[in-house]
Image (cartoon, rainbow, N blue to C red; front, side, top):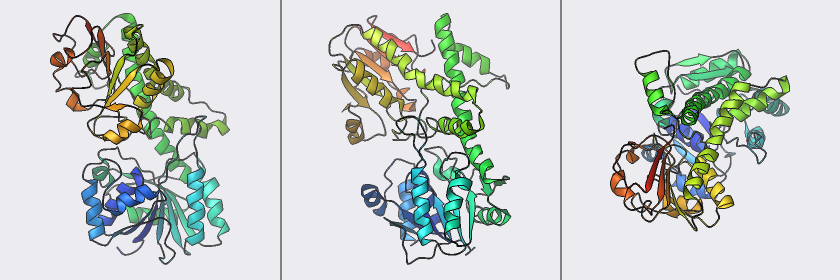
Length: 431
């Protein structure tokens, strides 16, 4: 139980901080490295810099146990058994994946690692990164090491429960690397799935999120085709799924976030050297990315030539269930950009049940509550599927809107037969 007990986690973002908190509460000595001073200041006080159920309590408990520590750089006075790489791999301005942060932290690890350390990548990377980027850097140190890719696959809002329940994929450089990583992760989760290589583990991570993206894209395309044909897509999907195990069409709506927005692009880029284009995955991502343009066009048409329209965006986080305040990859940000570019006179408001007012202001919106979002608005767009929207009294809220106006429900949260003023259009995506 004491082997590989002293671990250094590079990057205290969503993946690194949740993993560190869980490991610390499982008895590991965890040292998290975070270069952003603001983030480091928050987590050092025992508080997460993002919303995740019960995470603050777990961080405080880890600190109290003496098992969880935070640093601005790798401590040189500690001999670490394991280094876990959890830094981000965002897309650049050209839509191509950036691996520079993975390379940078690998260089830092190489400068401080002891002989025999284990390096584990959990960040989403281009296929071949472990073998072709990380391994050569480790080789140059002249030290012995073990190398594994063990992807993080939790969903935001349930990370703490899934880290100790989901099967852990393990791919390694050699048999010794695999056995060592499996032994460590068995202290977290009861099920380990070993695969044949580093690249196999890298690919599984990319396929997980690409599959989900494509699954949601099918639901969105069904909604689009039904709107084009003038039939009720929500009814079609509900009836097709009911009691029929071979059909499971996703509920249509916006698809984004820090993983689904980028991982299909990383997969496509990974396959480029092999001359293979994953056409289905490419099309699915294109459909999901087009949804903002589709909704914007419908709302803009409803607004007509209204001068200085008041537009409220409700549900700014990339998803509403489970709760999160994560704006990374949120299609609300794309919607804001479209209004700024094409209707710069619009007054934009923002409402979210989890995102703080400061985050909403930073996104360029006036923060409002779920009543004032409707008051005097020309358009209200419900962007995510937070369940609290279902409980809103839309009939009463509709009386607060300007006339004429539109409520665009992107998630089929409101009934279509509500008693609302005839000058208010309630549009449910897919109906």
